[in-house]
Image (tube, rainbow, N blue to C red; front, side):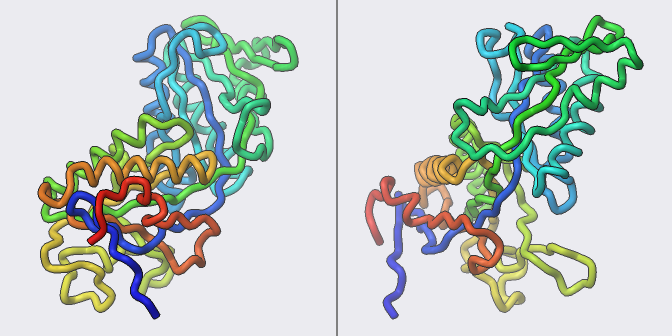
Length: 319
């Protein structure tokens, strides 16, 4: 059997491996407010505690800021994306998070952000939005139809909370990932931060972990009963020489991961490519030694993002 080719860009090796991602359900919500800072307050609250479906119920993040010419009510806003493993769980998370984090926030309104007419992601269902939150109005709420869309006006102490009746949901992709193997913490952070910044310039994706980066990469299963996931010992520098399955060499002092959720596999692949390009721009001389990815032999999900294929257009020399 021939050994896989070694791809090196600017002194950073790209592993001959793939990231394994899986189907999810997702929606986009548009949060508007009197000022963009208040829309962002609501968005940050809504997307809090939403890093991983392992323990949070959903994965969510801010997609981008919106100008007043991009929102249904002509006010500044923020677009957020939410991902869950099922339509039922996604609907539950939407109801709880909008009710506790957007309805409560001064001057906000919320609208569905998936346009069925233009969505590239396959439509899945519609999730309750105002149709559930309207009951907070205690009978004082008012329904209004504008074209085919129903909205709810719920009286609150600063005026009215306006909310679209439902939000379209789509089939989506979760769990795309990149691993940055670096000489030390400074180099790993620089690579991961540059990659997140590049990814955030793209539409239809979020990186749900704090600052877009996760240090506690996991593997499926554990030696302890009841634990569904545990530390990815193969990429823990402190276990070099102790873990039989270590994939690290002695010069690797820090590994950081980025997890990417997107509305389509094309969106996830584009974000991963942007991340590889940003990290390799720093290169080996800045301590970015290798870029790898996490997979489970193809058993976890049907979406496989091969790093060499993603980086092919970025190749600036093979080792």
